[in-house]
Every structure is written in C-alpha cells, then in structure tokens.
Amino acid sequence: MSQDVVTFVSKVVEETIRTDQTRPQPEGLPYINPSSMARGCVLAVAYELLGTPKPELEPRVKRILAVGIDGHRRIQRYLSRLTVAREVFFQDEEYHVRGYADALLYIPSAVNPPAGVGGRPTADISGFYAVEIKTTGTAEFERIVAGGQAKPDHLLQLQVYLWGIERYYQVIRPQGGLVFYENRDNLEHRLFFAPRDDSTLLPYLERLKAMLARVAKGELPDGGEDILPLDHWAHGYCPYLELCQAGQRAAEFQKAQRKGTPDQVVAKIIVDRIVPKKRREGGKLKKKGPRSLDELAEQLRWD
Ligand code: SF4
View 1 (cartoon, protein in one colour):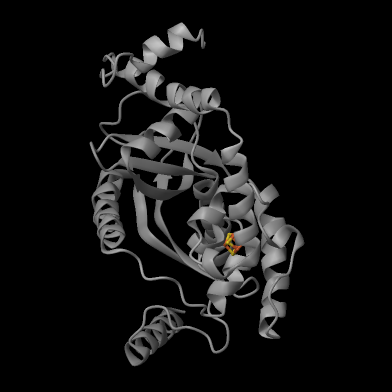
View 2 (cartoon, protein in one colour):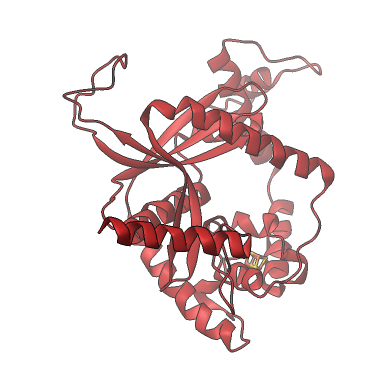
C-alpha cells in the first residue's frame, strides 16, 4: 500500500512539473469556476467557458482586488488555530467544476475545546466547516451587517465549496460554512454561518450540466431559468453585459424602474441605511445642509 501511495503522489508531482501548472486544463471546455457560478447566471458561465473576451478591469479595480488577495492571507492566519487546510482544492468531472475553498476548518469536540478558547459552546458544533473570505468597502459592509446575513452570491459560492469538498474527498463532509467579511476601510469583520443546503445548488448544477452539452455543440442557453430575471442585481456587475441582449434588456428595465422611484422612497432608502449605522456608532450625522437626515426623517415622520 505504501508503495501505491508513493507512486500515485509521484505521478501527480511529475504531471504538475511537466505541465508547469497546478491546475492543468482538460482538452475541450475549461472547468467551471465557483466564483463564476456564484451570480447564478448559466448564460454568463457559458460565455466564460467559450472564452468570450471580458473588458479590461480598471487599474483601480485591479488594485482593490490585489488588496483583497493580500487580505485573504492575513485573514486565513486569524483562522489558523482551527484550520486543517487553506486553499482547499476540489474538482468534479460530472459537473465540470473546479475550485479552491479559502479554508477548511475543523472544530474539535465541544467536550474538548481547543486550549485557550473561551465560552464553551452549548451545542456540539464539532466538525468540518468551509470558509469563504470576502473583503468589502464600508458601504457594502454596512449593508451586509444591517441585513444580518451574507450576500446570496457569497452563500451560493459557499454551497459550491461544501458540495465540492464532499464530492472530491468523500470522507470529509462539511456540515456548514462561514462567510468571513472584512471591511477593508477599517478592518472590522463579521462572520455569517450557513448550513449545508443543496436545495438551490443541485437544480442549478443540473442546468449547468445541460448547458455544457449545448456549449459543446456551439449553442448558448437561450432563455428560461438559464438567464437571470430582468430585475436581478447581477446584470449590472456582469462582464458580458455589453454583448448580452438579455442583460441589455434588464439594464433598460432597471433604468425605467429607477426613473419611476419616487424621491421619498430614494430618501427613505438612504435613511434606512445611513441613520441606523450612525445610531449604532453612537455618533451624530454630519450637517451638510440646513437639515440632517435624522431631522428630515423626523420631519417626514419616517419610522
Ligand atoms: S448580462 Fe445578465 S443575463 Fe447576460 S450573461 Fe450577464 S448576468 Fe447573464
């Protein structure tokens, strides 16, 4: 057996050296990346698999992404006392998915918590957990904290990790995951737990699998659930928006919706987001004009 292990691992090492790639791509379509799946648009994944060119990112956006990658390494260190692996590889041939989870944690039995960890849990939380790390600006961080849960695209990406790790390693079954958000402006952080939930992921994987067969024949998905609804937020962030007719229709629809939004509703959205934040911080709203938002809210009798 020991010789089998050496032979197998040696083959993997030699292949990696020979191809100079830790992730050699298959002939034909490349693997689907979990971050591309996260927004939930099968058409966008199809564009990516076909190598459709994306607009070049602005230098400022590239720098923000680079800061995010550096932040990942630092945040992974914060988790190191519970970490069994970082950048956990997984690959699935049936659904043609391949990726890396940011970290895999193992919480030892609650009866025997790790030395120095205070506040013994009331329930047995021992087991494996996948982690998705995200860094955000202040506005988004505040929105997420106020909403009390991780963003849907981040939750979906986390579910792909949970599913992918179990499919690939078989003996590891993460019972849930965590999305770790860090505000890159002030390094405040917040964690959100999500249990394993295949109810959204499995139907989505089936649609992706059907898309793979179509893309192999040179066809794109042409409607139904494979394209996000008109009012979905993700069209506006999609790198294929310019060339995607469905995305263009969605952009027109959303523009018309915004035009029809009464000023009071826009102002209320601002108050709902900014006033609670200031209250939480115990601070006062800055006076830019004759009235603060608090005063405006009070005057218009907004709750
Ligand atoms: S623009 Fe919208 S519909 Fe088109 S690929 Fe992107 S997310 Fe999908």
